[in-house]
Amino acid sequence: MALSHLLLLSSLLQSLHSCVPTSPGGIPTPITCSQLCPAGSFFTTTPPMVDSITIQGPCSVRTLTCTIIPPYTNAVIMYNGGSTITVTGSGTATLPITCNTAGTAWIYMGTAITSASCAIF
Image 1 (cartoon, rainbow, N blue to C red):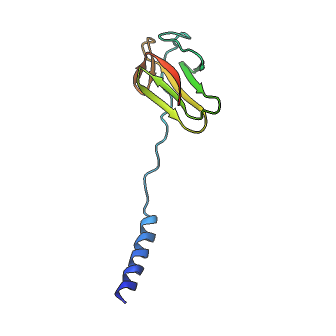
Image 2: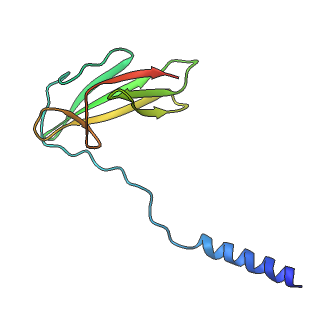
Image 3: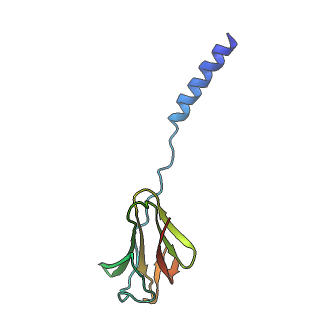
């Protein structure tokens, strides 16, 4: 009898736990900047990295894209000599960077990007 009460209590607690509100997942921060940087400035990329620049309002957005061809499926962008953006399975990784407020560097999450390359794993 005690075991059945314990099982019932356990199942009720699990049901209650599933109804507890949680905070929403992270929402990507919108790209913010106020400068236009010249195309290809501050560092260069080499194939197979694709480097494109778009203008969003007063802002230069440079998107670095690494696309790996089969049989490889893990696309990796290595930047600043060691940090990485890795996407497994799809074969494509992107790194959106913006011009800093002084117009002197490309920035990703507060860090100036001085080099970037595409790696195959």
